Length: 318
Image (tube, rainbow, N blue to C red):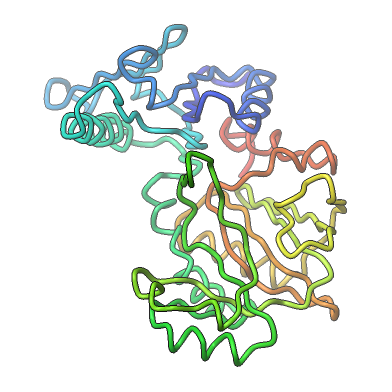
């Protein structure tokens, strides 16, 4: 029988992917305490004690329906939590309060000794820099498209002129609105004539377009690797999910080994990797998302992704 130690699931209020993993944990009879840091004060309470007991730290997190002893947590699924912004406070007070939550709640969780983190927030942060991702991928033998990160307009125009087709990609997704309307950053074509002096404000990522026939989304959970071929005809398949078709594929052994080594390099337990597949069938590394979406793939492919996540955190697999 599974030992009754809880799993913490930190995520936003509406997260279908987390829901599927929690359903599997329930099936395994593993207690789950789900919370979102943004709920601090109303839906979340934390208490941690130091120097007052034989153990270095003791404490708990409590939601309206569940309580978890921090010394007894078996795993933490750090999915997609959001931090409070305190809109009712003055800007200075809001910044102060937000910092206290990050370093108080976050610090108490980081002080836990022993639970499996999928993934630890500090590991996620270290792995979330695209320039470092590209260099690490190439060191591990994965093919990387020609890429330039620059805030020099001359270098950008020269790079774009050198390659047949080039796209611009954001270095990190950031919530953004224009005229009150949320917008997102796609992988969009760019020409040399579009580059002007405003480029100097910040570094931009430019990448030669892979002449592709499909994309791959690869999910790694522990030592389990799930690879899905996504066919769309789109430069950025995220623009229209209704245009996608899916098939399960096996990765070349060398690529699978490189991906496992990649996660080991950053101390990650899980990650979602994107590749472009060219006409020769070669794979070109695009990026890693340490906390990427995968839930929509499971019903299209039948792959046991959520069950594998749950088994990992329940201690039934590696």
